[in-house]
Image (cartoon, rainbow, N blue to C red; front, side, top):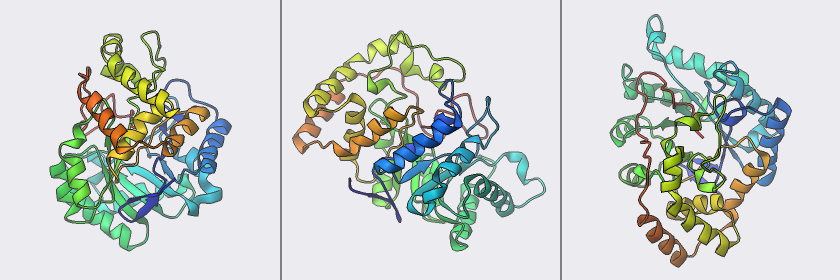
Length: 335
């Protein structure tokens, strides 16, 4: 395993998205299982863990996920890179300035995460009533004060990213990216490569589709947000089968799984990418992390790219600033 950089933050090449331990994928595991899963990921070599202050909506209170992650990581907090996110509601600025509003969010996350600093602090979504430049100024102050080590943006356009980066250098952009969702290749990746910014894809296995385990008979129950993912409609599962056929071919040749090939594909393609596949299943988490042990030759990668380019993708989701002033029904599907 070779570590990667999100600007100044050194991380394992694949991280762990923790949202599913609190909501978003149907029935959640019990607390003991979730903590054990996170610690097993660390034992395997993962040093990058992602959560958010809002994860835990519906079955559990907001902050539920941060509390689980904090408890799991506490024994080795100094050895890992911890990322969390805040969302600023338009009503919060009525009687407070932006610095104090954001500081309140940050301190609440400190308490739940059992820490006194955050390695990577994201603005979860853009609030169009709050200039991103103003957020960047506050993030810069947090860095100067030693409260955070770096900051990031989630699901933003390159124009918004540029505005923020010019004020306080951005460490990472978290957004939707997979073999089925390649919008970031047009502008975000080129900008980030040029400006030493990491890219952290959520749903890098296309909400499980690329694993090959999601079929037309799969039922998404409870709060499972995959009910809203267009690629997982029955007609699109069938229509996107050629992509799975391509993956299966390479998985067989490399003695790997479909999911691992989908991850190693992006690791090979971009040296600044650090995907954070999310799962609530311990075996799947280790399987996903194991992708960093799979290697593609340049010839194999080029052949895979060509095969993918020949596949027509059905069910585009989109990935840029999809929720401007509030969280939409799909906001939860972040890992």
